[in-house]
Length: 148
Image (cartoon, rainbow, N blue to C red; front, side, top):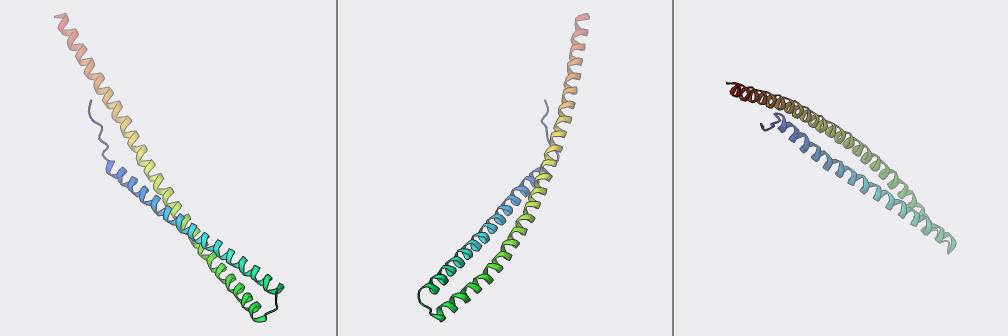
């Protein structure tokens, strides 16, 4: 039996490498999004701490400067949170873009694998036909030798 050689194997190998690279880029984008979300959650916790501090300042003594400082810190935290939300949105958009690229890479690899499977099926049909022809010739030769 002849050996099956897929003539576009190098293309399939390239598609596999591209898919692996795209998986790594997707993972990096996912990691970036997780980091940005963690930063946002940290800012929310800091804001809650400032709010708690503000309540405590109003309950204890009425030091106007401390209360004003606390209010300014809360306003500043709102700005940081708004900026961080934009960063999270950017990271989400980047993740979606990388997901689309990964999906395309997977589809291209699957197409190449399907082409390889189809080529292998054609090869097997041709190989079976060739073997059948050889067997027929061998049987005909053997039968002809016995008749003589």
